[in-house]
Image (cartoon, rainbow, N blue to C red):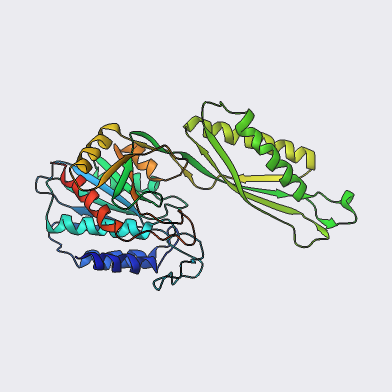
Length: 372
């Protein structure tokens, strides 16, 4: 398949972004393509809206797994592409259209030129939330195929095309979503003494929240707590009865996550007493850190050094990725693929360079073929 055909696949997928566990059109597209390949060494099994695709190797002494995520984001696209999203309010703003295309490219190589070892391609739904990796890892199908190693990639808008980047040890942080509701008593702005003002309660919480990182956690264990959204009230002369804040927690050490959540809950108890209100907290999707196996990264680096692709050592990042759950159970690694976009991940104008698709396919296939 030529480069322009891979570009077509990417653009087809870009037009049908779907959120977690609702990737019905995406699964259908993937199945249609996979069914067009020679089937003699291929086994395809559905898992919810995802897929397990098994390629039997010539020796088949072990199974190497490669994972791609398949979901989009609830972001209104503003790229102006002719192939922009057909699903209003949704976009492949994190490069999962690239990820899927690269996986299909590598799968096509494996089917046409079978590797020595078995390969399991995992098309995972719900990476952006509510989280599909942990559920897939615990599934009967994963236990059936029992891979001995696993790897994945993620596009990096900051890196140039032709470059990959990784590191042994910690690559991405532990992350948790954060949703908090405040319930009080609304009323007329002229009679504040008869109300329980939830704008005040939520604002007080936001100020105190900053102390969780600065005063309740070991300064040698990095963490970030961010509130990115606050909603309250209806009109200017009614005191708000309800408020809601939404944010994220990111930590380098798993134990820091528990300590921060405990700190948040202590603050909320104080808010309830101070403002005579009720609060509820939901931590949403939680992602385990991406911790790369050193031996696997070194092997990948050797593979890339024997290609035309450039390798860079990656810094640690507070980015979250639920691929970490796979690495918690199976030795492996994740690497960045340079796509040179002026706009970053989760941006409505993300524009990865499509030349990177073939670079990704080459990096993935060379790594799989190195398993002899």
